[in-house]
Image 1 (cartoon, rainbow, N blue to C red):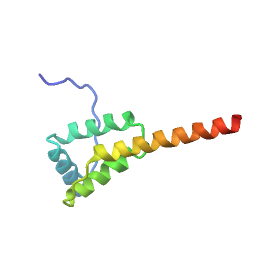
Image 2: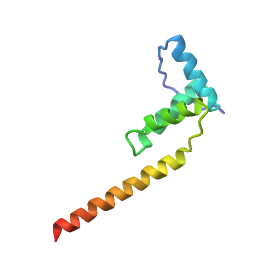
Image 3: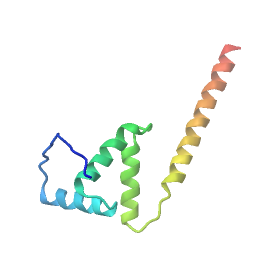
Image 4: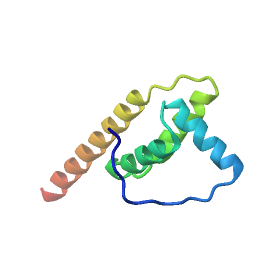
Length: 97
């Protein structure tokens, strides 16, 4: 049974934009509306402010035939954040002495 959606939002797109939207949606096995919903729902749930840029970079590299393991990219990013946080804590401890 389809979800009843009482809200409607109309978006004016150029022919190229519509074609790109449909291609992106098709790549993920979705229709254009579901694809936009997915992107909208993903954006606020990310911790990194550059998550959209990372996603677009991965998509771009993927379309060029490169294989990018985003899980490894995010793991490396998380590791660097942990390292930076521990460095900050070490500096605070040294200043407290």
